Image 1 (cartoon, rainbow, N blue to C red):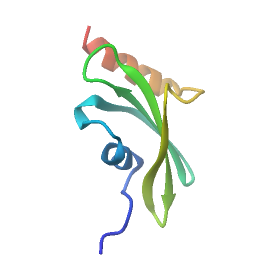
Image 2: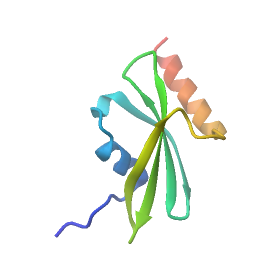
Image 3: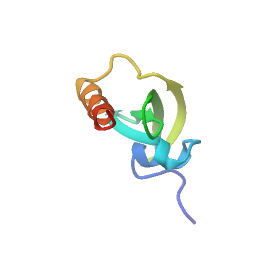
Length: 91
């Protein structure tokens, strides 16, 4: 029997996110204990939309709990840089 959940928060989000994979680009992850924030740009070209998913770890496996439009605040500097790098690639 397979264990529920995923190895990483990114895997949980990409598997459970309700859009095709090509429309979701992970630009950063923050883990604090058994909670993680996964920062995404959605869409496969401009205009990109910012999105944040929150995941929880139980028994060593990650599941997505919920998501919301926009980046959770405060936005980590490396997430801002990666999001800008993705945006510039399409200009």
